[in-house]
Every structure is written in C-alpha cells, then in structure tokens.
Length: 183
Picture 1 (cartoon, rainbow, N blue to C red):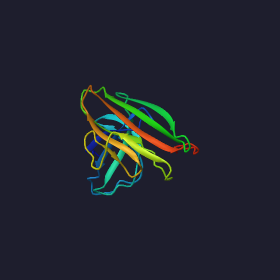
Picture 2 (cartoon, rainbow, N blue to C red; picture 1 turned 90 degrees about the vertical axis):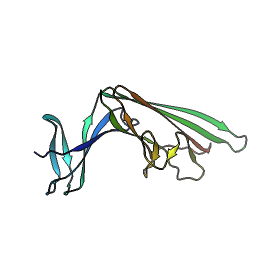
Picture 3 (cartoon, rainbow, N blue to C red; picture 1 turned 135 degrees about the horizontal axis):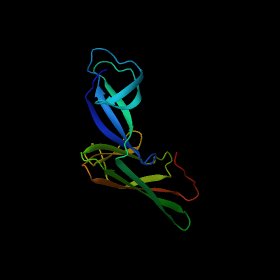
Picture 4 (cartoon, helix red, strand yellow; picture 1 turned 120 degrees about the vertical axis):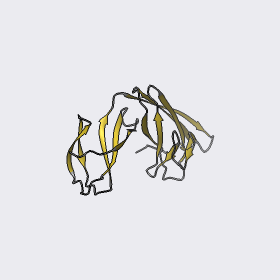
C-alpha cells in the first residue's frame, strides 16, 4: 500500500449530470513508476472506489476520480427565448440562459470546478455572443474563463452549508432560413 498526499476538488458538468464528482490529484513521490492497471482507493482506512491507473513516472501527477458525492447538491435549469426580426432579411436570435446552483451540505469548505458549454460557430453568418458573465483571461475564485475546448469554467471555493449560483447567458443569431443545431 502506498500513501499519497492529494488535493481534492469536485468536478461538475451539470449539463451532462447533476452530480459532483470528487477528483484527487497526487504526485508520484516514490522512486518507481506506477504501472497502468486497476487500483483500490482508500481514504484513511475506508475503501472508496476501484479506479484505473495510467502509467505515472516518479514526479508526475496522478489524477483519480473517486465517484459522485451526494452531499453536494447540483441543480441545472436551461431556458431559451426566441425572437425573429427584419422585414426582408429575417434573422433569428435565441437567448439561452443556464442557471446552475451548487449547495455544499458538508461542514467544511470544498473546491469546485464547474463547466458549461458555449457553442462555437464555424459559419460567419452565425454569431454567438456571451451576455453574462464576463469571460476573463486568468482563473480565480468565482471567475469565468473559456478553455480551448470552448467550455466555460468556474473555479469556486464553497464554504460548508453554503450555496453558489451561476447565471450563464448567451445569444445565437443567424439567418432565419438556416437551421442550426448544437453538437
């Protein structure tokens, strides 16, 4: 058995699942590599989960997902509002509102990483605009950033017994004759 010091955070992707998944990031501080394969994960003397290890050389980071935690309550609501304008050249504009709420039912503070998706147009006639929040360049507590996969991301420390709410709003404007869909 090998003991590792870990940093824990919850990864939340509410559009896909209203669960918070505990993630552990550790560094292989031994002098030998960890080989890929199955591993039993314990926290203290308590069995937590089975996991799959990747090859991890000494000094490299090891990330493990330890399952959903029901004490972190996630709610997700999508709303959309459509409008069409123009007499000759009609355009359609749809405003999307995603409301995300995360409640920490634990007594201690937790770290959360929350993701949502911002559509990316590959057609110059389709314009996607973020209304709120403001997208920032640098990460920070409660700051919204955009990653290279075009996902919006918030990192937030949530104190025990408290909730954190996000309103993510954007518009998609396109010629009415074009049908659009997100993939």
